[in-house]
Image 1 (cartoon, rainbow, N blue to C red):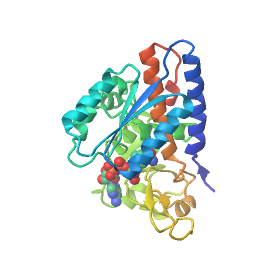
Image 2 (tube, rainbow, N blue to C red):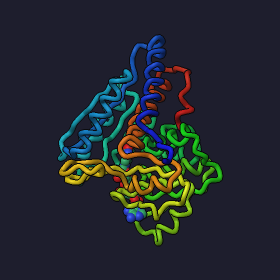
Image 3 (spheres, protein in one colour):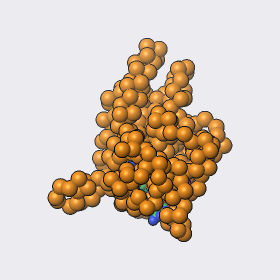
Length: 302
Ligand code: NAD
């Protein structure tokens, strides 16, 4: 059996650490960390993600401020809301829940978030800092993957890594973080020819294609580490054999790939919980900076 890269367990461990950091910090400053989450429209998956984030904040002592705005909100109103949050002294981190309803310009809104309060690391300035190897908030999903790999002592330096997917949210920052850790990185995407040939060479395969069960054992080199970022709800099918039950799966065929990989993330319980945890880490880091606290969590941030 391959090593299971258990994001749920690691997330719990990091949450405990954050909880105690906040408790110690509150002996010196008056207010807890604050995270503002901006949800626009009625995407049902976003509702679940936002609620999970608010629950996670509550568990460790972060104040969460969730704003839910209608899908037909004007760009102007949304910018105004972001400016209010930028000016709100209780707020250390701001997260714009993606995807946005059609017609709303995502990059223009992300650009309005104060880079100092950018909990998701998606502001152009912070993406630039990642590119240059300077400290700053990092994109939560790839940062969570890096923490999971580090915790499980998966070697990266000199390893051949293939990232499937090149989105700004996952694939691109993932590739930069792996490069910064001295892996030799190739990025594949929907126009890549002969994907199997490429992925077969990977010591480390990160899959963020958003295609349910795309990657089977034929894509994976024996002994590789496989990280599945994808998450999909399969209505009416169950990967565990039950009938008519919605179940979750990733971009990787877990059972099949488990027979060849040396380490693998499950879905659920792999990358997902780590994404939420890195959002908490980013918020607590920003709080420390804003309140002049000196303790470090920098070992958690790639
Ligand atoms: P996206 O749709 O923005 O990007 C997908 C990328 O995959 C694109 O670059 C595309 O070119 C590439 N791609 C698509 N089909 C491909 C194929 N057949 N072969 C090679 N490349 C292909 O998606 P995203 O926002 O990057 O998210 C990817 C997946 O990760 C989704 O399933 C999403 O739900 C999931 N996700 C999970 C978390 C988490 O916390 N677990 C966080 C973010 C995203």
